[in-house]
Image (cartoon, rainbow, N blue to C red; front, side, top):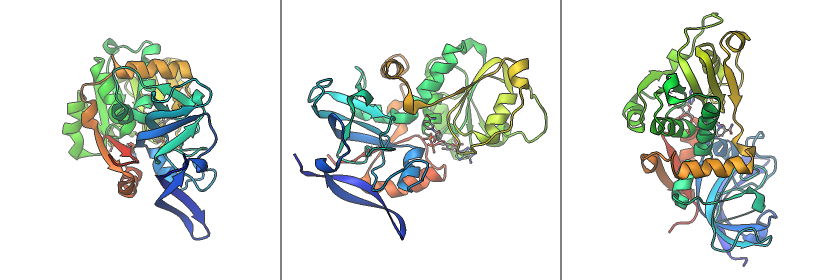
Length: 332
Ligand SMILES: NC(=O)c1ccc[n+]([C@@H]2O[C@H](COP(=O)([O-])OP(=O)(O)OC[C@H]3O[C@@H](n4cnc5c(N)ncnc54)[C@H](OP(=O)(O)O)[C@@H]3O)[C@@H](O)[C@H]2O)c1
């Protein structure tokens, strides 16, 4: 079983980091008890960093990126999964410490693997991918903290991006009034179709005054960008609001005082989808396949093969992606 399969390989030499579409065999894969034939992967911001050999993401070369994979189990020596089982792997070390989903096969520990929930196809699971899972984790934190649709408006930043677009559409589907923040004026119709009630510019959530508190507007937030936008949202969160934070495309640092937390009881919740416990993982995937599944899911996705990746990587690094890019490592 050492036949060659396509893979997108990142290598480092004295000349720098390079990416190429090449072939590898099963014997080249990292150890693990579960061998999975990959049907689909997806493109996340972190994957684009991995393609560039970013030291915060890739620790050793050569490397195969792809933090998401959905496919069919070929073998599982621990017996936890059976050949033919349809499964999803997102996060843990996939495409990070270990080779990821931009290849015909992955080999991973069974502990990383989630059975494809009833109601979702392999392709649909990768429309969600880590982006959708992170959005769902954010929604789950809002609900866990008592932020329900009657509490008021929920602001979502980076709204046309992967995490943002899925957060908008899941929240709208659950009956929340969603205010989408975007830098793309041409994407307002797209956001309305996802269910956003209002669309505002990044400038409207990027306050540069020295005010310790701003007018309370948001019952909750799914912030995917960080930086001063996150700082502004925290200061304009309403009494007992929950603000979730997962990303850093606008900046890794933000300035804050204790006032929103001690005067308004604002909660700031960090999201780490990578190491989300397996029980919660299964629960969220089950929601994503059923009651949280937005009707517009399919409309969010475009599919590329491995040779189409470089252009999409450049687009996501420039914040230019709208919705989700599903990656198909092996053509039909
Ligand atoms: N913590 C976790 O578990 C976790 C999981 C997944 C992703 N993330 C992080 O979440 C972030 C979003 O990931 P993604 O895959 O959704 O990326 P993405 O598809 O590129 O979306 C990011 C969106 O942010 C907006 N944006 C880009 N540059 C910006 C800037 N300078 N200032 C303000 N907004 C900007 C753009 O949306 P608009 O044009 O609509 O404004 C862009 O589409 C990344 O930082 C990623 O690393 C974290």
